[in-house]
Structure formats: structure tokens, C-alpha cells
Length: 205
Image (tube, rainbow, N blue to C red; front, side, top):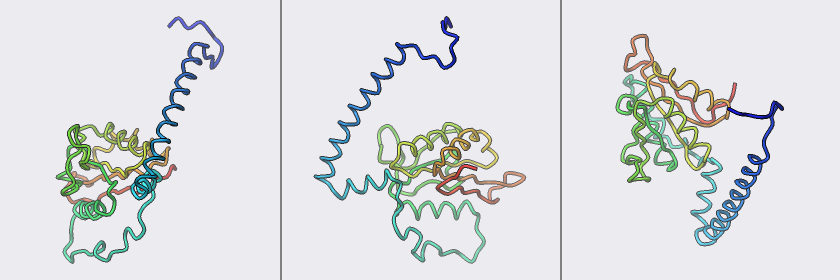
């Protein structure tokens, strides 16, 4: 690679200079954004506070207080069905909740009813169709949380979770509050086996 120096951790001056210029550019962009948000906060104080709360990942008070949230049928039900009902209860109380499945939403019950599909033509949709891309799906969920302003969840069958383990590990190491819905866990990958839910925040270790 024609690298000239054998000095450990050596950074050439031209590379250091390039990154210093990038830092200056970033500082200017941040100042521009802060000035824009200050004007927005002045003109729309309630919306600005709502956005600030989302970026700080604050949950609304009394999120699980309503008795209807805990109503259950006397008839035994699959945990994936119960999980789906919980997600749809939360979607109305958490407008920032967004996520999806690795092409398995009808099976692991992760579709948010009436919330639309996120796409290039509709940024307002809250259901993401990730396709059969478990690791990419989980990386995207992590990235959205790192940006802030949203609560994300990802889903697949438990038997396919191996494909996403590198990103699961990153979620844990960074203590990101990514919600994992891993359904269909049984010896024969049965539909109504137990479900794994990792709620926010996930903690390292």
C-alpha cells in the first residue's frame, strides 16, 4: 500500500489537515442548525419541546397506567399475538415508535395497524419492510436510535436471530434501547412458542 512510516499510530499531516477542515465544516453546520432550531423554538414552542423530549428519549408519564392496557382474555393466546397487541397499544401513545420485521410481519405480528409504510414516497409511515436482511435490519434500528428522536423495534423468528447477532452485540455494547421481537421459538419452530422481548434500555453485560 506504499505506506512510508513504520511509526505506530502515525497520521500524515495531509490526513490530519483534511480532518481538521471537516471538523470546521461540521462546526459551521452545527451552528447553522442551532440557530435554525432557536427560531423554531421561538415560533413553535410546544412542537420544539416535543422534539427535544424525543431526542432525549423521554417516555411520556403514565405510559402503562391505563387498565385497558392489561386486559387479557381468559383463553390462552400465543405470545406473538399478545406482543402485537402491545405494540399497537403503544403506537398511539408513542408517536415516535417505528420499526418492522425481516419479511415476517404477518407471522410475528409486528405490523402497526393504520400507521402506513415507511418508503421513499412516504416518510410518515411507521412500518418498515426490511426484507430478509436480519443483520442490516438490526444495524438500521441501531443507527436510528443513535440519531435519536425515535423508538425502534426489529423482528424475526428466534431461529434466524444468529444472522443479527453482531448487531445485537453492538446494541448491548452501546446500551441502545432497541426492542427485539423474536418469535416462533420452539424445537420445531412452531408458531406459538414463547417470544423474546428485549425492552429498552438494553444494558451491556
